[in-house]
Image (cartoon, rainbow, N blue to C red; front, side):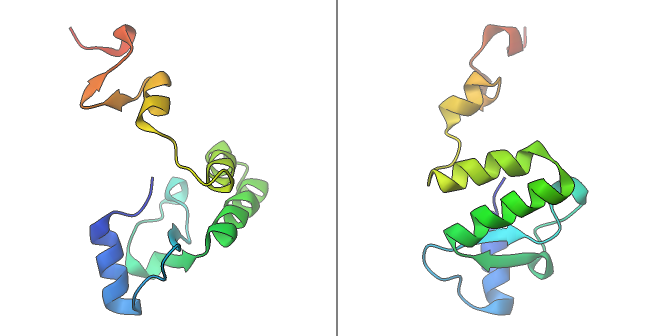
Length: 102
């Protein structure tokens, strides 16, 4: 998950504009209770962001960091269709029948 526009606006209010092409990254990961509070965010270049997720994966061992590393290195996020193929939602409805509510 990435920072929302609102989170970015709060960060920029306290710390100044996020440079073009930079990502906001949580210092304390979400899976360890980290929030999108400006004090827990840092602006990183794409390469720094990818390397940070790789380091977090090596340190904490959470596979979400490895997934984030590969997604960032490939210069893309996970698309709605990819999330859907994993059972996620597209346009508010589950694409796969087994996940749809009766």
